[in-house]
Length: 217
Length: 374
Image (tube, rainbow over all chains, first blue to last red; front, side, top):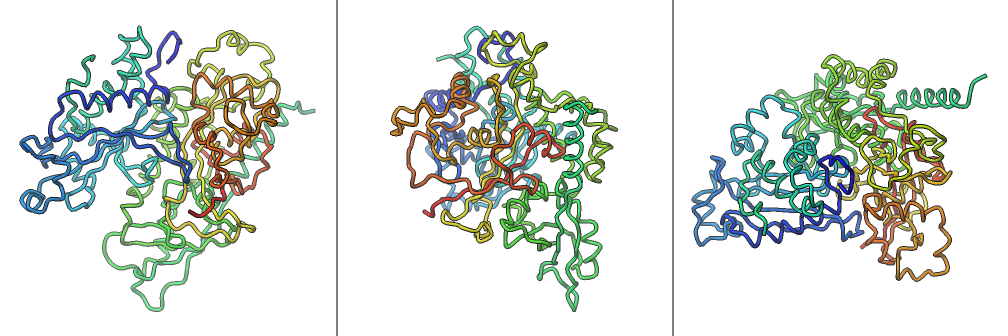
């Protein structure tokens, strides 16, 4: 972004890393639905050469009932850790899907990209049709209209396995609209980038993002 | 008499013809478990275009094996020495990456059942390949111009014609449409010497580029880094790739940020920038504890880029790993292969990008690095 007169809606790698760190911290401070675990930062390495700078954000083990909503009535239970509990699994494994969400920086588009996968509590991965059951109706509509350009399965850039992903090619355009107003402070803008971005892509895949994430601390 | 420019254009034309005509002879065997006939059918020989994709060969392969196939729904995939092949990687790239010693014909196994969906993303034949191609083209266009508009705004008819030309290996048809996308060629002149004219006025500012301005230039590159034994003497003795985790796939543009006083960027320089951890430590001034003080001033050609990219770290993705002078773990580049050619590392990088690119405007580079076993 820097001092260029018209911001193009993209994010630098440094901006991504800073915004990711801020998001991990902020998430712990705000009140988050019990069904949501913490975001963690996963450093990655290329052929045994670890890098301090490169990594991605992960939110893993989000349980959702088949209807699409996050499971909310699980008081006193840390749901993410309860997945392996036999008694609980027996009673409800039929209609519970577990999701992992990763946010990876795209060097091509200079924006974050969402990768996600869903699986049964048994560990078996969900197919696209099964994932569809958990999508909001708006997304289902888009998916039907543009099968190849909205949500597809592609290789996860760091895990080299097929994950679902949202196509990023228009991200910078709508991020520009979302964040243009707080252009005044560039640093602030990059810290706000991921929360704003997440509020849009989360909605597309049925991941509820707590409002508190957007309020300034 | 041809001007140097015309001559260069003629050479580029010739290079494109050769890239498009490049093919790998394939010998396709039907997987044992899928054979329902006795005797089992003989293998099928076919030329796989280097710029093509395996699923596009399925119709002819299937016709050949049709009498031996079990009834039911086919989910076709290919395997080489136990490794399921990624269908969205061009055939020539798979061959360069997985066959250290080029095996001709290349013996592949075709499966019609048991799709490894935990390893490969699903493939619905030509449609999947087409969209994978279009999405890559869109990504490359974004890298080069800062947006994907020229691809998004293509008419449906042009998109279909473009894809058909790629699928059929019809270079002339491809050029008719692709030139309208205005994606190059990358010009060494504009970058290296700034003779006069339009690029001149950018010189004053040192701020990040506005996309497509010509000042910063981003080249779409996909790198496939394969580890081989460090003490390997003959590349043909490399152990075969048993899983995709042992290949690092790096989809990252090469960014040229600044006018580089008169000299061109070599392939070595570009790879070093993209993969600093795989090159021998070349002191770069910015490392405080490098321990090789005497060599600090020996890399004048590097200092320009290093300083200019300080403001944005994108061109130097992993300086942290350089700081670790862990010579024991450091990998060495043993071989660089593009379009089946083992390239001289001093060759101008932009020439490689302009002339050896694939039809989705990506340069696919296979790099073999020697690493010590853990």
